[in-house]
Length: 154
View 1 (spheres, rainbow, N blue to C red):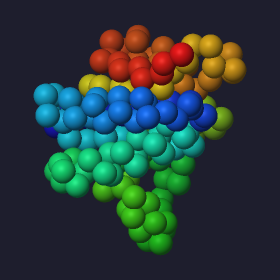
View 2 (spheres, rainbow, N blue to C red):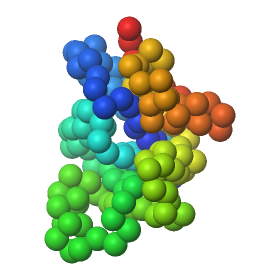
View 3 (cartoon, one colour):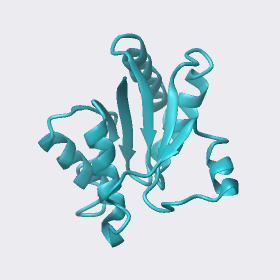
View 4 (spheres, rainbow, N blue to C red):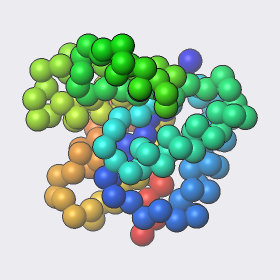
């Protein structure tokens, strides 16, 4: 089983070129690299766009799975789980992040990176926040020597 995660800025430049690059990258990962699991966090427009595209591609490749990786809600009510599973095939919360406090999203991103062979980023090193969560995740993925695909174009 091969995994890929998506991490990007809260706000992105949505262009036809970006959509095309996401589609091309996903086709390569599925067909050439055998990636089956796509992991998503939350709270970024990049995640939303990628989820939409992966959901469309799933019609052609029904074996792929969309996994929502939670940073909170260690235990889900049946109703909440049902709502999540309307958009995703599964949801997990990595162990060890439940007491992460303000850094819980950083810890969640690190857990996703650790579990994945490929990391698709939308990372602009000049983003308006000096220490964005995306920057921290990108630096972590570099440190862990993950296969990084950065789709940001200036």
